[in-house]
Amino acid sequence: MPVNLRKGQRVEVGLTHVKIGLGWDPNIAIGAEFDLDASCFMLDETEKAPSADWMIFYGNKFSPDGAVEGADDDQSGGATDGDDDEIISIDLTKVSPQIQSIVFVATIYEAKTRNQNFGQVNDARIRLINAKTDEVMYVFDLSEDCSTATGVEFAKLYRHGGVWKYQAIGNGYDVSSSLKVLGEKYTNEIFEAEE
Image: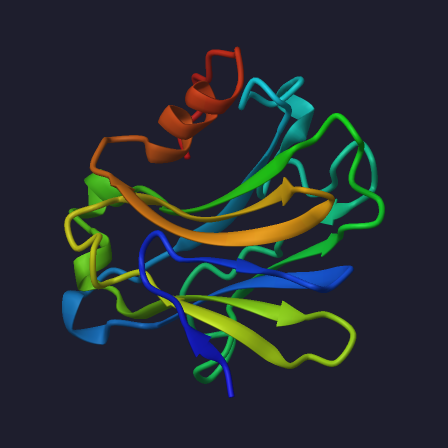
């Protein structure tokens, strides 16, 4: 039985291979489809990515160390029935020693143009899954605390005392291009592309 996490809650992972699944259900009543994107930033001790190559998203699916594989882009939330629409796979044994944490984010593509936010998304959730058994370990509901957000830092994996821990974050951003803002926060790069 998976554990439902609260914002700020921290747990020890105790696994070497995990998947982070982003799931949501289509909201037919709103009109335009919701295109949520799962991305992550692999950060060093300064809490910055060593370069933009360590930003894993639909435009860069593999980390330089081979530890992270990004999600295929489900543009409607209809790819599954209640499970994960986008999955990021992580082999914690391959994570470069310079990387101290991996921050996972979810953004809504063209959120401002479509006048969309996480409060309008049906059942937006994040799941940490044991990649070897497909057992769901932890679930974090994204809709609850981030109802006006167009982008959310939802969780992070981080090294602590020689083990990997997982924290539910739930920090929302209500900006015109949330992936751009998060990219600039976690790298020293300026992004011009639309999310």
